[in-house]
Length: 483
Ligand SMILES: Cc1cc2nc3c(=O)[nH]c(=O)nc-3n(C[C@H](O)[C@H](O)[C@H](O)COP(=O)(O)OP(=O)(O)OC[C@H]3O[C@@H](n4cnc5c(N)ncnc54)[C@H](O)[C@@H]3O)c2cc1C
Image (cartoon, rainbow, N blue to C red; front, side, top):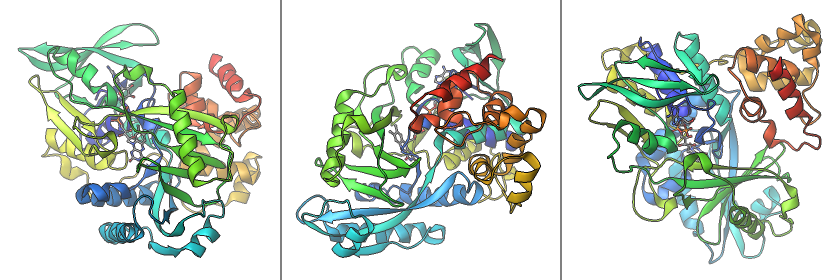
């Protein structure tokens, strides 16, 4: 399996569970591509209803539920509010119909009921919202998740079942016999050494790099993707417990979501023609997001000084003509001449279903081993009731730390804490900007395959989303990596 974003990670996990012997490689860190740059929602995608993509929405709502049931420490239901204005954007009846349909499509996988809100209700729930022209709104439920960690848990689960998984290993070319792919020549990016991996079946889940990898397979192939760039900003602002789906001046919708004590604002959706490795946040992306946010929350400053962090990612969308935000989020699984399968497009939310579809293609006779589609336990799933007081006493850490570790690692929080028994200095905080302790960095290095500072700072611990005056966190992690 080429590519350790959420697609490749889940294909590896499911194929290994079905009895295959899997090797999974990523040229960078797990989830370092699009899978850590999303809006971090497991959602049906209420806006896809207006494109009549009912099948995609219904499947996503089911997948949202499956992930919540199986990995509740990483997937949190959240209420979303949509304010509606007279004569601007989508009308109220459409919003009411939309949230009603959303609940109908979720059926037995529902998270809870939608509500129609009067102008007064909306102001009570969101005092900072623009009030001029406000006529009411609606609310509905979706889920927030930790995208990088959810991807990592798939990799760790595959590994625990016996898969060979290696980050920082790039596929340079495919090995072929009579035109059929029989493996890949790969390069270990840390040592510079190349070696061959033989495989009966190959899946490429390279996200926005899919066309680059397809050209390694056949130089003459035409591009299949139409990547679009999406930028987010983490803004110093607490909007309360509810998230917002807002309408922009250009009829596009965007989100403002409670995130690490602040607000995640995004996203943009613009065509991208550059190299996938070079995607960056541009000044015009920030201007656009701040302007749209200001339109909806007029009393907030929305100046650049209150931006905590920004990130940009590429949607690996399968080519379609038309406006970027109208391109379908459906996925495609294609097999080429040399027998390699390519999986492209799709939403994060439906990754499990997509991966299952991939594995069914190559080993249909074994897929029955994956029993019930509602059961998709990942590494860390299944946290049962624990005696927090006993744990704090056993390890000599405070209750906040235990609660925080449980929210990150689920049932594996004990594995992290057990490190402090051998080395009590690991109880210390990484920095003042979060509750993270040094044992987590040690655990990331020993068990979670972290190699570089950003592997830990951004993806294992999400510290890049916190406001930090000192950047002590980066220094601590860097020092720990040197040992
Ligand atoms: C701004 C934005 C917001 C989004 N928000 C949401 C959301 O809220 N909810 C949702 O459901 N979906 C969302 N999505 C969509 C979702 O995030 C993506 O569809 C998904 O993460 C893509 O995963 P992937 O595994 O296909 O690609 P990636 O995560 O990009 O993984 C591809 C991997 O392949 C590796 N690779 C490339 N070339 C090679 C090679 N030669 N050898 C080895 N490895 C290689 C890369 O290093 C990379 O890690 C969003 C997307 C964007 C851009």
